[in-house]
Length: 325
Image (tube, rainbow, N blue to C red; front, side, top):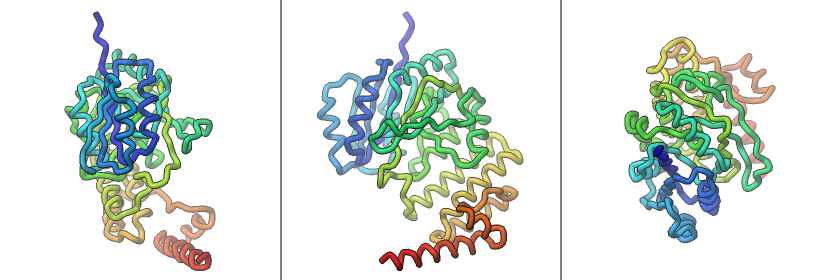
């Protein structure tokens, strides 16, 4: 009798609101039934994890684990260590999958046991699924791991949303867990490390992640010093993983451009991080990533250094704020 693979879906949850119950219902409605859903409450204070635990009490294959607040990476690691599936999917607490998503990915995984299986994805806003649109990417195809990573980043930063991947447990055990020193863009370091070292990614065009956007206060919107330090460290480590996989002119330019993206965000509040980025960009041979902005900004950067343009824009923004108050 053919063995039916167990899929462990790990959900870190920090003040997830009512979205957590909706996500659990979506996963329980998957056509593939040999699922283990592990929800790890990361020190929430809004009570919704407890409510979900009560709502789904006695549900087969659903477990709740509680810990003090240590961050999403720690919660994912704790969930993974408590899981037993041979295939792993990390999900956010407010996203959805199409009904056949897991089944279709498992079918590919059975035929390609050494591959990570990816899927298509798109965004919807707040509670309105009618706003959903796919977000097509050049890497929606089968690729070797390092080549997938290079192509994914060739045009600039690309969100490696955890929920699109179905990962063999053996790869995680070999390449290591999530870096618990990271908060902002911890997924970039993790998936750069994992994907740069695996043989192949297989793309499943019949599996779709519905990524919820537009929620106020989510992690990606944080600009604290801790978050910025995390972004810098994750970017540095991710670039190191990429260059270890393939170090050539293209990958060095990709990494320089990634440093430039964050350098512009760090300025002017975090001058030390800006300096670190400048040093990295210089060592990599220079960046081609322009300072972001509209038509006026593009014109100004033709004649002025980007820092002067940034200072000018900040001055204008502060002046407008004074008039509003």
